[in-house]
Image: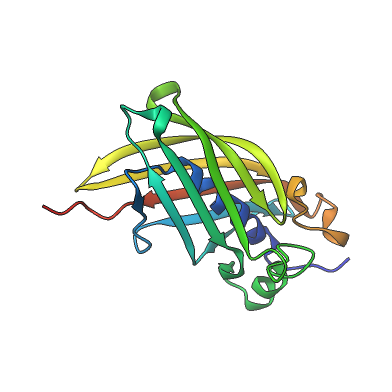
Length: 191
């Protein structure tokens, strides 16, 4: 079996798409310099984290108007990096993200509701590698220095999205569970 030094980063793309669903603002784009989407998976029991360098989100969030709030996040999976050039290249290939055929992972919210402990439950459809799945992610929201800030973690199973096909389907080397973490910040309002 072929071994990659850091295949867990492939899951970051899935995480990034999902992370976007928790960030909703008054029709705002995110501040890319202050925002981040990462994915963490375990390879032979060791956590491996990767990040997406390019993603975009359109957020329409008002805590007083949750029924009309929404979010759409698009992630360029070809920008996923895990630190090792060889592994980064492999995760963009057919067995993992297949970035040539499926260049984007997308999350589109379907509802946002008040959740437990001051969080919001953001439900929506997550599409990765051509497969769409219903997901719900708990997200926190706060206002900070004129910006809106959204944080959350969405656990997914990589095999649900056929991430890690072929010889990589074996979850004893690269775990099936992936944690998608996001920190989304909107530009500060002026004035």
